Figure 1 (cartoon, rainbow, N blue to C red):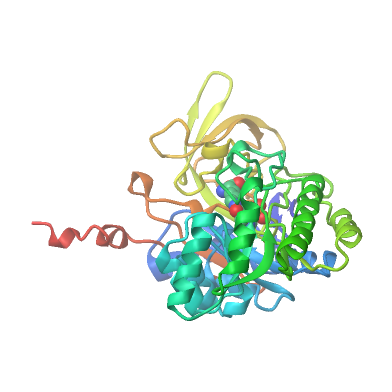
Figure 2 (figure 1 turned 90 degrees about the vertical axis):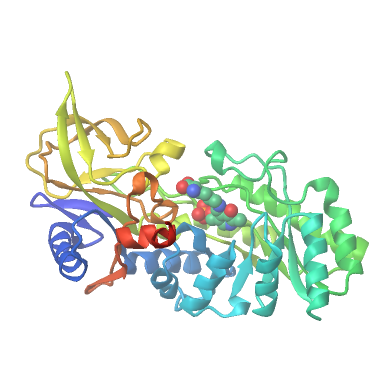
Length: 428
Ligand code: LLP
């Protein structure tokens, strides 16, 4: 089990969190005079999650979705996992992937609004493949590649018009979504690939959504991609060497007394073997690897009494972890040390001046006192990366548990860091 209490102390994949917090707070205090909340990542777990994919889907390649947790130190952990590369969506992520040690041929470049500067940088660095989202983008890539006397490797990101069951903000494969090339424009895109010498056609890509539990939409999408591969060959003489089904494998955001629910990878493997024996099918997992591998460590700053429950005000807020406010996502909240086995009702909120800054409403927790440490679990994916300076609150430090030791992999942002961008010393 990922989390368990032994003698009333919380363990996180074998790590005693009470001792860990003590150590990490000491490090942060000593090195940076910092006493606030922080993200803690579990390196062995992060690697284990990537290895599960590599083992369970042995004929696939994986391009880790950098956006889900993009600290360079975390990216480095994937360099050693078999058949892993990086999926980037901006120059910033490309830069991170290179800094971590990925080579161009291990990187795919996605994103619905790539700028010319980003396309040029990706061309110069010989990335493996562009996932192209529109006819205009295809035209632009062809033009920039011609100028550079290069051939741009491209896969068409198509919109399969598949409805995947998930939160409306993270479904991406319906025709009305902004992503991908619509069914009626695929022929034109293929004909452009055929005509333009500066384009090297590789195949097709689709990403239908995030936090998906069912294999069915993947199968439906794969069928569509295979149909397109056949069409590309028959009607345009274009051979397919690359197929990608994007990311999206769900993780269980609830804490279970027994084993956590897992995405049915074996079922997916069987479907791939059956449907696509001759193609390697690629994936871009993010959350599956990063979500469970990170927690937000935070403290109860104040308790306020209501009639039948209490409000616990934490020292971290929606600017540090926005998922509950943005998607009404629920993250497990776990006291680090239990005072008793009794339960009390709490609203758990942050300090930001908005009612949306609420991590949980009416949850039953073991009795809390001011100054107690809590963790907000399953916060590795889309946690720190979506953090902001809202309310002029600094970005949080990140600490990596290596399996033996703790390393600060992002220092706390200082107030000087924050104001430096505003060129405030030049304002008269
Ligand atoms: N590939 C593409 C093209 C994507 O757009 C995404 C995620 C992924 C791969 C990785 O998906 P994953 O395996 O992590 O589900 N901020 C939201 C999630 C946004 C997902 C955006 N795209 C959240 O906190 O739930």
